[in-house]
Every structure is written in C-alpha cells, then in structure tokens.
Length: 246
Image (tube, rainbow, N blue to C red; front, side, top):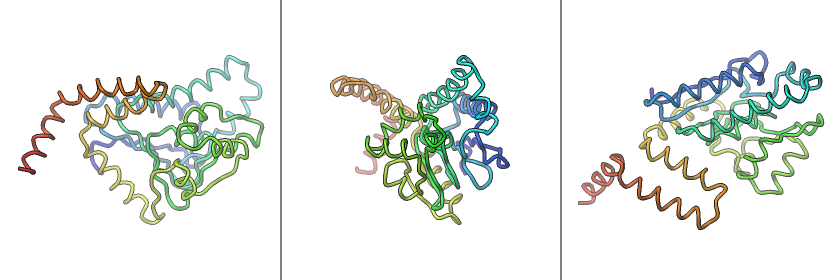
C-alpha cells in the first residue's frame, strides 16, 4: 500500500473493537496526526480481528445509566467531535468494514467519506432496541439515504448486509471476503494517486454546500472554481492534458 495512506486500526478485537473513551480519543489523535502530515493523502480506518466495530463498550453502557447530565453530554460530545473531525479532515477518510459495524460502529463508518465492505459485512443501528437513540448519526444518515429508509433503519433497529447497504447508499463498494484486503488496498491506492489539493478542495466544497441554498452553493462554487484554476496542480494537469491532445 502507498506510503501516502495513514492507517488507523481499531485494536480491541477481544471486545469486537467496541468504542470506549480511550478508543474514541485514539482515533481523534490519529486523525489529527494525519492532518498535520503533508505526505498523507488518504486515511484508512479498519478494525483488527473479525469485526469492524460492534458498538459501545459494555462498561460505557453501564456507566450511561448512572452518569449525571454533564458526564453524558461530555461522552456524547466526544463522539460528535469525532464525526466532525472526519468531516473536516482535508483527506478522504475511508472505512474498510469487515464483519459487524453496529450502533456506534455503524455510526463511525457512516461518518467516513467512503465505505468499502466485505461481502459478509453487516450494518445496523440497533440502539432503539434498548431504548436508546442513535442521535448524532441522524445528521449523517439523512444526507446518505432516503428519508423513509432512514426512518426504517433507525426505528426498527435491524441489521442489513453489505449489498443492501450499498443499494441504500451507505456503502461505496463490496468485495469478496477472501480478496477484501487486496481489493481495498488497490481501491485506496487509486484515490491516493489523485491530486491531493483538488481532492481536499472537492471534499470541503461538497460538505460546505450542505446548509446553503442553491444560489449560495453556486456562488461558493464560482470562487472555488476560480481558486482551483490558480493552483500548480491544475496548471500542470491542464498542460499535460493539452500536450497529449496536441
């Protein structure tokens, strides 16, 4: 795999890579490190062992029932800040999902810019089954699937396979289990070879337009378009393109 790719591995296989405060902090720290490294072009997030992430750690769930409002808000904010860090990161952040991505684990995958899944991978937001609400992931899910399908996923709390997740727009590509690692590496390498400045600007502009009116989004695009024309990446790319055509 290209050296321009930062790998973040959820490394709690004995706990099915369940999210706790320390793991959330680790992911945030690694994202910040990749952001600061000018050689990094893509961030790849994966899980050690058979599962990507099976949700919240059981100890965290037990604490949730006895924590006061301040502690619960702090814990929720840590997850929310992580989702924002992924969205604001200059590089594409890709989730490579093998096995289960459930509850907070599914939310983490959903927060990534792209999701690559093994054929046997499973996705779901089962929080409702224990009287909980997948609150922050709704801001992401509403942007990725149709409203009625989002409602179904969140209120029935069922688990779906990788192919169905792709048909809904939650997953970008599905690969056979036995060739998953090789396929992911090839897919990510292809993205890492794209001009990094153009990719970063594309990501920023795409998400910046979320809350804009159509007119404001066009106006924002005008300035981004004009700025892109001045970069060395664009000038060099246009020069090479014209030389091939000539």
